[in-house]
Amino acid sequence: MSEITYKSPLYIQLREVIRSKIEEGEYPPGTAIPSENQLAEMYGINRLSVRSAVAALEYEGLLKSVQGKGVFVTGPKLERDLETLGGYRQTMRQRARTPSTRVLIKAARQAGPYYARILQIDPTDHIWFIRRVDYADGEPVGLEDIYIPMSVLPNLDEIDINLFSIFDAYDWAGIRPSVGYQTLRIACLDVATAKLIGLSEEQAVLEFSCVTHDADGKVIEFSRNYVRNDKAKFSVHYTNQ
Image 1 (cartoon, helix red, strand yellow):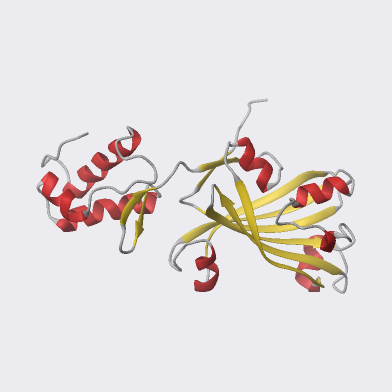
Image 2 (image 1 turned 45 degrees about the horizontal axis):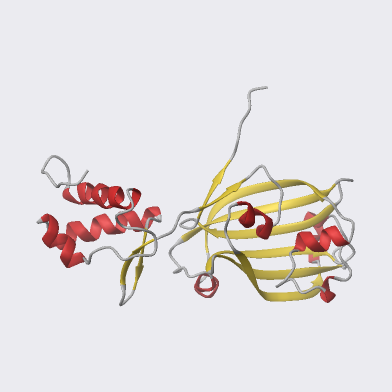
């Protein structure tokens, strides 16, 4: 679609025109689309219709507004397979993306009743709590909170998890993550937390909670990942047995 007619609402038509230009590569990832005034002049429509079209594409994650600079085309979404149990770095490398993380918190604490129940340990047992921001090609895509019984990785304080993954630590300790039970919900973060991954408070995220077991059925980790829905997509494969 490359022209505006009067057969349907103008903002819907412009939305599809911009979408087509993105899909066809005329507006490549990382580049700014024409300004609101330019689009209004190009297609002979009012600025309110332009604003509605752009807002709809921002909601879909195809565009991103940067205050004072313009509206930019986002890159392709990261695809992750929900059936595969693997670390963040491993998953991103499989998708030909460059992963990195920034650890915000790495501390020992008592499990307490809530996490003790999930990790199947005593509330007075100590656990590792890790909070980190995940990046792909230098862009923040998610925030992870990870809880690991200290008995599983007693020497985690000696490992630089900015350089090495948690799955590396498991491997070195002879632990094999085997089964994960994952749940998904839509959530909103508080202002400070949302800011860590480049979001505003009103933007929703995908919240994945996962309990991971080793080959013997022992719980070795509980994680809660907050993933930007404009930066990632997820797939599940079904088979007819």
